[in-house]
Image (cartoon, rainbow, N blue to C red; front, side):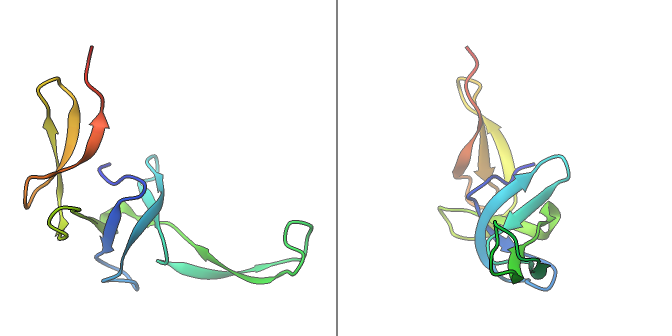
Length: 110
C-alpha cells in the first residue's frame, strides 16, 4: 500500500468526493484508510464513566484505499505513486507526475 499516515489525499469517489484532507490511520491488512473529516457518521452512545453525557457522537469511519489519491507535496496535484530505489538501495515513494520524492518506504541495506 502506498498511502501512509499524515499524507494529504484527495477523495476520488463516494459521498465526500473532491475533499482534500489528511490520513489519520491506515489499516494495511484490510486496505482501509481513515481520513480526517471524511465518511463521518453519527453513533448513539449510552452514558458511562468514559462518556458521562451520552448521546450521539460523530466518528470518522475508514474508506477503501482505492477511493483516495495521494497529493504530491511538491506539485500539489493528485497523483499516482511509484517506487524508486536509491543508490544505497533505500526504497522511496515518488510522484508519477513530477518525479519528486514523497517519502521513504524502507531504509538502506547495510
